[in-house]
Length: 340
Image 1: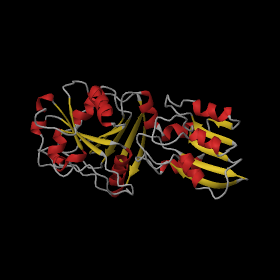
Image 2: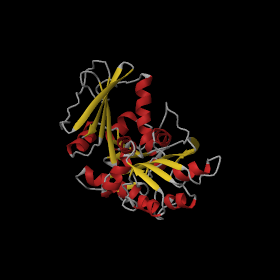
Image 3: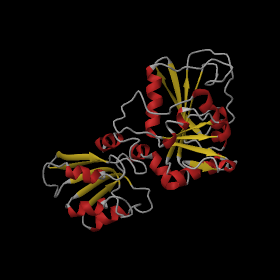
Image 4: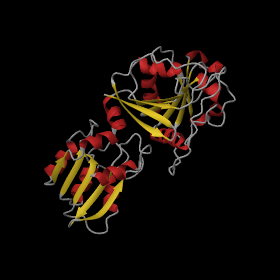
């Protein structure tokens, strides 16, 4: 099962809206095949593992970190029936599929055909791996991760009247871009767009799949820098969230919303653009609006050893409902918070 989880993790950031799944097949006490789900529309892990086998799988044992699917409302055939047809004898499963279209029925199908089934192997690790998928099956909201950087004395990011804070060591850059690769979209506010002119792409890490996450800018469209990278060369991959008064000015990749609640905006982004997971890299105003509505599933705070002059980040919400841990990134420290 650990090998299944390791295989599945190779596709982190690439399978949305599907879960991360790995599979291993054993026969006569040796591994004869293994595989993982690479991306939506491609073979599921169980099929990939069977196709990679170097001998017949009849009578073999299959391990997978998520219950084999049994429904047909998707791009690929149901895996549970495929295991029956291939005469797999026994299946070990990390966790049941939270998708209501499966939710135990895959297990029942296997059992009804005489296959031995065991559920709950390394279940905590299996649930951690697919935390985004689990959230999306249970909620109308995407999985939300908030990230910001600050100096040791709490000075935040960049403003016109202060020096830009640089967290430039390689470990911190790699950490930030690994986060970007995990998520469907990255959101910033209008001020961050104008001050930083960010690209919000993936660099410094392996990106063989050439993933290019959606970029989301929220704010007053009239005040956005139309010459910025995201509104020119990256416009096709950029979603603008702005007031409905600009309907005559913007016609593609736009969410017109006059909602006062960021929660409603997140729900609309999921419904209209299929955004299952969202990384927030904006300024204080956007971050505090997300935290004040208790919408962050995770938070990462990167702290530089610099002492800076400038605007100190005032967090308008306590983090008592989060469990914290920390680790060093070169000469920086990152504090990571997970909702309890």
